[in-house]
Length: 181
Image (tube, rainbow, N blue to C red; front, side, top):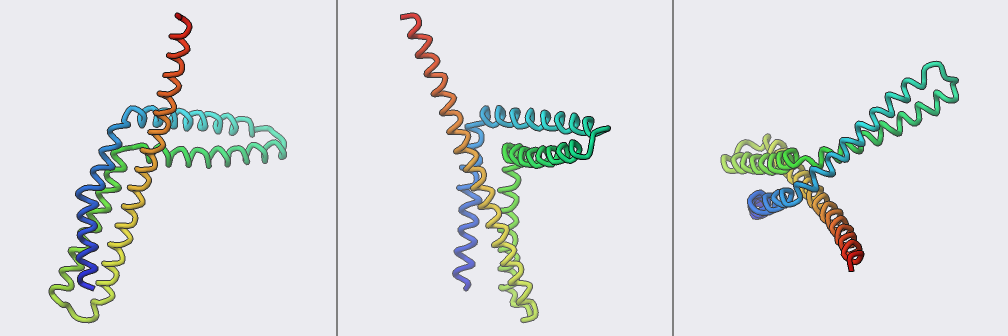
């Protein structure tokens, strides 16, 4: 068991020292794309807010059928707004770095606490506490891997979008150059 914990702590240190910084540095490579997509999402949220406010104004003095239809559209707009807000949060590099490094650091701290509890061989009554500390560390580490996966997926999506935009610009340039020939 001791070897497994030692290996687990080394994996945490490896991810904290190499993988997490490498992936979070990739965010900076696509900073322009992130800002552009973040602005688009914020504009969509503003548009949804305007539509929701307009729907609220339309409800006044309407029949029950129209009111129920408008309320359904408001619910859909709320769902879209919450989805867009999640995407905006995922496009915030500062938030992502805090999520990843905070969870990895907490996981490492919990492993140190577990090691201290094992090292000083407290009474057997503390066995459940040691197990809880270890389980919490594993859950927090899993959360950090999930955050890293989300960042990785965002980077891939932005790369595809940037490639498509670059391809579109290249085709426009070819068409424009062909006009002069």
